[in-house]
Structures are given as structure tokens and as C-alpha cells.
Figure 1: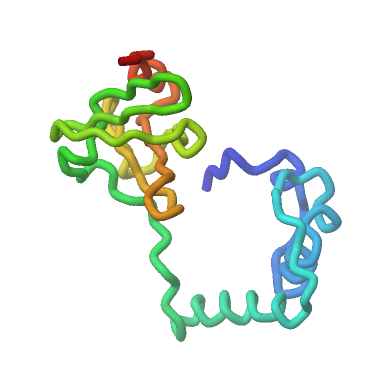
Figure 2: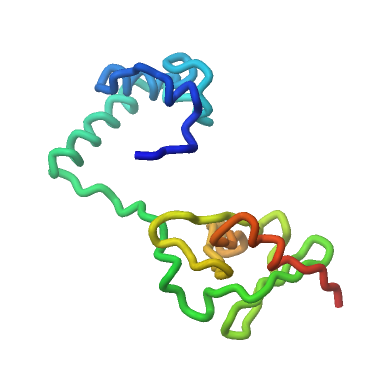
Length: 157
């Protein structure tokens, strides 16, 4: 399916996935597939681990509907969600959108990301996406990594 961000250890693994191997993975991913890059230490509680395969089976059987985890459709955003520029001064960035408004974000709470999914942005377009923390964190999503620097400009009052 093209999961290019999987580690070489995971890609080269001969693990046959089933309830037992999923339990072993959830208990300790590094022990099941040494050298994988999964930033997850595991679930020590056996009862909690046992709930995962049961849930996956219920979703697979159609008894439970899986939550919609699809990324937002970034092609269909309004002018208030299209970034025109990002100006920074010191530890603050001012993110200006196509509707003429702007929001100031502390540099530590502003993340830059790219999106190449099926609903990705056109070249040269970018949008802000909230990242929790009661609206103080945000990610600005670009269509390609090489477009990030074109939006950033130092500008102090």
C-alpha cells in the first residue's frame, strides 16, 4: 500500500499478524520487531491489550463503526483558512489569511507540516489547522516542504 515511513525493520519483518502477534506488539514493539521506529513503549496491562484485537474484530465484522480518522479535506477550505503570509519577530509569528485577518502565535506553538494525501493542497496553497491547547497551538499545512520558506519573513514593528 506504500507505507514509505515504516522502518526498514518493520518492512523486512516476516511477522504474520494475528491476535497473538498483535498482543506481543502492543506489549513491547521493540521486542517483537527489533530496530523498528515505533515511538511507543507498549501497554503493560493485559486486559487493556486484550481490548484492542476485540475492537478491531468488531470493526472488521461491522458490529462497530470505526471513527472517521481521515485528514481534513484541505482543498475545500474558506478564505479564512488560506494562509497568505507568515511574519515573525522574536518568538512570535503572525499568520495572515486570505480574508485579511491574522493571528499571532508563540513560535513554540506553531508547527509546520506538509500534506500529500489525496485531498492535498494545490502547489502554493497552505492552511492553518488547530492542534489543541484551547486554540493556542496550530499547525500550518503546506503542499510541499520546499514551499515553507517562501511564506516565512522576518518583520518586526
